[in-house]
Length: 274
Image 1 (cartoon, rainbow, N blue to C red):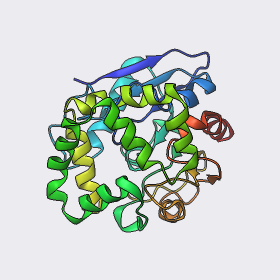
Image 2: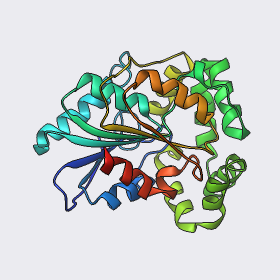
Image 3: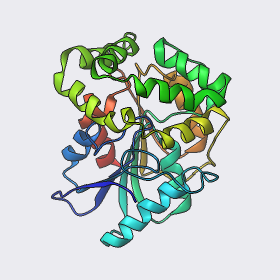
């Protein structure tokens, strides 16, 4: 069983928005970019996130998620999709490896590098990240504990603390009530204990998960916020360039972790120019 969201649009080709690594809802935090493009939107919770059951076998991390996307597209008669992925660049690359004819264009927003390419740690998120890396065995216990006490007030306060070093993100957290409401709605399943997918993906990341290079993707784009707080933007770009050697990269000077929410027009423009 899996959960998906479908929003009809005025253009022919469908857009697929990948699930956020730590969040799960129907595109509320990236939907603006997709709506700007006026294409139909298809969003599917990855296995173990939100309303999608955990995978029966996690040995091939993103294979079940890739097969879910392919199955839904086949059922809906969709031959090709344009992909918008926030954070989960590895999921996007794995989808293209497993189903090479499905993805036409793609925009990777702040794609996460592998652990060996993340020397940058700031704030509460950096502390959690390094704790995961030091002892992957504690990931599930830490996440269950955090989820158990994840009230709306604590989530908002934690978000503000995490964004202290990113002015664009902090402005959203402190000055945009709709953003805060969307963020809390996006994390509600996580707070209810639907964490298996997040735990498995974080465990894989902490133990060195990587992807095979994917050359020839000149119709893909990478957009990277210069104020991204969890990974050094330069290190992330240096990681992805040899893995997507033909994919142009654009650095956004006034954007941070929530680039897809604060600058949806940038994501839509990147997709349109591909």
